[in-house]
Image 1: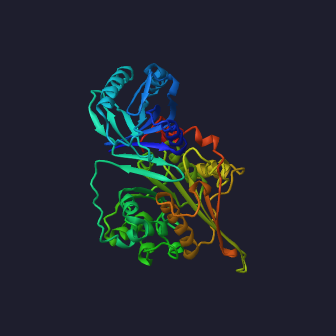
Image 2: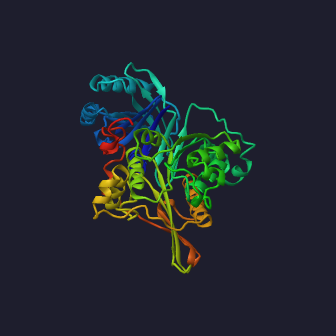
Image 3: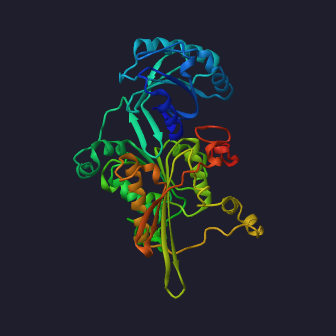
Length: 459
């Protein structure tokens, strides 16, 4: 499968430049990181060069002629770091195919780029239409042309455009879902691959909802087995599962398969800090963080940035005194778009706890010897009704991004706060970009993976 992913910050730049309002074609170049996994090849936009209108030799409604030497710096960077080059121009008249002029221009440009950049990996050419939709093609080293099957924009709104694939959705099973969100939205969900890390408190109801919306594939990650203490909140679990120490991911897979919607399930009964798991999560269209700890949240935020994937994080806090008095119940759902604010910048975790959890996982004795380390993974109260409400808000957050239904723009909502004790739910904006994570947008497969030495080789 061939894909291109773009963050909102770069998509907005491209759209504004390509459609200045004069009805003429314009062009831009993007430098792209790469993600390769089996037969899947993904280009990840990490930097954009807007070709100045005044630098073009000629611009017409159906033609743009520009000096290609302007991109020499990008091509040198691509050659040095094994990056991809994406050319993108517009068709202001809405013509939704590559013209013969486009093809002749592309062959000339990418023949030159492949001669400059060693390697067998492809580069790409795309066209943006006035409604913002993008379609494209890859050019291999021998100038073989391949369709781009999916182009995604990870922003306040999530855009997924699919090409060259037939819809296999069973509409009879999804008639009620389509009555609410429409055939187009449900068809997109049916094609999506969703990663869920954490299959217990908030993870279980999240998975329950995803499977009943007919999500195409779910990647499940959780290192623990079912025990009696979490039977009160894992949907589908039983005392038999707890007594036989059945892994949580296996219980979830069993329950997904029972429904019969055809959702594909891949299970990882392991901690998320694992090369193979990271690579699989990097193939997802959306990530759900259903974890309590800091280390997993940090890693998921890194995957979101490196591979341009939206991330939804949820959590609940129940403050109960020893005599049973409830002092407060709180929940929050955070939507993370690559290049924007992060879970770190929003104070959802801190690096001290990330380091402490990592040491405790890798070397418990060393963790115990370092008394200055933060205490981690303390047990806290958890009940299904609270978790389910937070999870429902998270799933509705995904639906709002795919099918905007709010009475306000999605850009105004980055966090949803749930104040159970006050009976209130309200949106909150967090629009200051995180400088730490912003620099990783679109980096893709680098060594070591995610800049993490622990992921420097296959496990």
